[in-house]
Image (cartoon, rainbow, N blue to C red; front, side):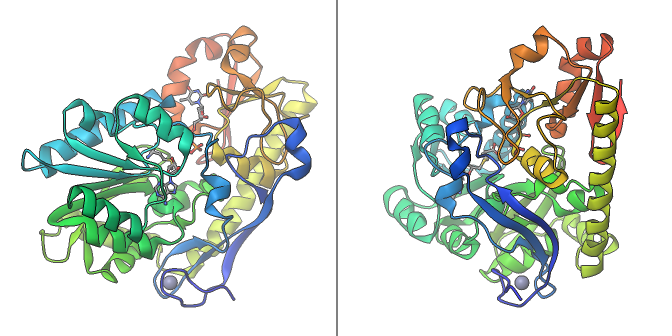
Length: 406
Ligand code: SAH
Ligand code: TYD
Ligand code: ZN
C-alpha cells in the first residue's frame, strides 16, 4: 500500500490510468523509440484528505530547458494575472520597499506587472527556456526548483517577502514540505502567501479527469490544504474560487494568528463536506464517472469516423495527453491537433503520436468537427472561432459531459 507523502499514512489508489507518457512531452518521430512511460495512479489519503499521484516521474524529466508550456500564450490568462497582480499590489504591499517572490513564474506573465511598477520582485522557475523569456522582459528570475534551501538563499540576499505568489505550481511539487518550510522562513510576519491551483471540488463535480497527469502531484481541497499548512504553523485565511483552468481555488495563507479568517473559509469547509471531499466513497464514484465519460467520447469519435467526418483536436494541452492515451484516441480518429505554441508545432502528441500542426492549418481548411482539448479556454476560443461554427463546424466537448455543439 502506498504511503501518503504529506502525513505518511497509508492509502489505496482509487483510479489507475495505466501507462502514460510525459504530458508535455511533445516529441519528434526520431524520439518515439525512447519515449518514457510511467504508471498514472491516484489515491486519497483518509488521514489528511490529500488526493495525490502514487508516483511521479523525476522533476527534471518534466521541467527543463525545453519546457513546452509558455503561460503568455493565452490572452485570458494574461488578463487573469494582471488582475491577480493588481490585487496583490493594492492589498498586500504596504511599504515602498516591498518585495514579492513568485514560485513557478514561467515567462513572467504575472511578475511583469510588478517589474513594470518598479516593485522589487524575484521569480523562481527551473525551466531555463521560460526563464530566458522572462529575463528578456526585464523580470528578475532565478532558474531553480524552489525549496527550503533556495528560500534561505533568497532571504539572505533580498530579505523577507511581503507576498509570495504561486499559480499552477504548488500542485506540481512533490516535496511540498520543503517548499512550505521555505515559505515559512521567507515570509514576513505579516506577509501573505497567495497560491492557486485546479480545485478538487471542480474536478470531481465536472469529471475533469484530464487534470490528472504527471505534473499534477496533488489535487487540493481546503481540507487537505489546511492539514498541510497547519503542520508548519501557517493557516488558510481565505479561499476564493477562480474561473480559470476549468475551476481553480486561490488560497490565502499567513502565519498562524496574523490575520482574521474570512467567513468564506467556513462556508467552503461546509460545502466540501457536502461534496464528500473527505470521504473515499466520493472517489470511487468519480472512477465510475470517468469510465462513463471515456465511453461516451469514444462513441462520439467512432460515430464521426463512420460518417467519414474530418475531426481535428483544438489545443495540444497537457490535459489532452491523459484523455488521448486513456481513451485510446488514435491518429486515424483525429487528423491532427491545432496549436498556437511554436515549440509544439510539427511535433507529435505524447503516447499516441497524433501530429501537432500550426493553427494556420485549421484556419485554411476547417474540419467538420473540432475536439476541444483546451476546454478550459472554451469561452475565449468559441468566441474567436465564431466563423468556424457559422460555416457548419461542430465542437466536440467532453467536460462536464460529452456533447456536440454547432
Ligand atoms: N505560473 C504560471 C506557470 C505554471 S506552469 C502559470 O500559472 O501560467 C508550472 C511552472 O512551474 C513551470 O514553469 C515549471 O518550470 C515551474 N516549476 C516546477 N517545479 C517548480 C519548483 N519546484 N519551483 C519553482 N517552479 C517550479
Ligand atoms: P492550457 O489549457 O492552458 O494548459 P495545459 O497544458 O495546462 O492543459 O493550454 C492551452 C493550449 O492550447 C496551449 O498549448 C495553447 C493552445 N491554445 C491554442 O492553440 N489556441 C488558443 O486560442 C488557446 C487559448 C490555446
Ligand atoms: Zn495523508
